[in-house]
Length: 204
Image 1 (cartoon, rainbow, N blue to C red):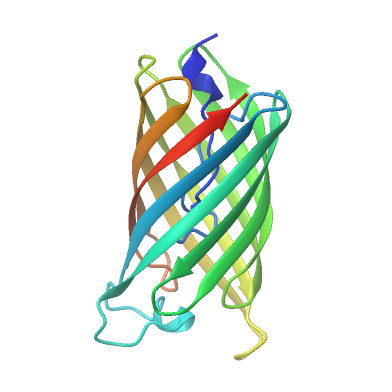
Image 2 (cartoon, rainbow, N blue to C red):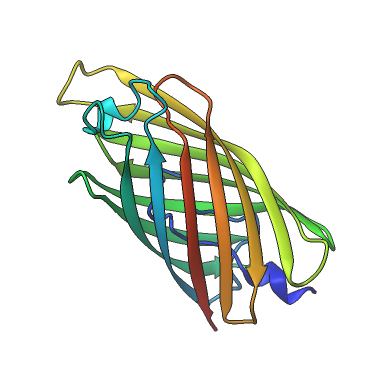
């Protein structure tokens, strides 16, 4: 088994980011009974749309910096639990809890699905599918689709749907430390683009 398979997020992330589910998740789950902690600075771009307006970023700010903390625990070989906290410098924060299930594992690739709940501009559901290709121990490349469904009780009580395409490049420094850079590409009108870098640490 490739040691790199042990590196799974968690967190963020993101997680700072933003990451509703966005930043940062990886397709491989944590080893059973192991822990992870992570930190992820991020920048949420305005993109001239209403996405950031909906979470309190004022027009003309061009975006917002964020910082995220994450933690994870390997429940089973193919299942882990993650928690994420993110604080945007405009004053809004995010907290989420999710479960990640490893559906497919091959020598150089992994595919998993992630589902969870969060509190953001309202309460919501996170759904993510991620695929990772690992050409060697040092490098892996991930991509997928992230969906957030948010119910905003403070505004019009409608369900807000946000989509992102997360793209992540990670580097295994050793069995303890994983570094990464991530871009979350805006897909829907209520989403926005996010760039993030971070570090994740695994304790067995």
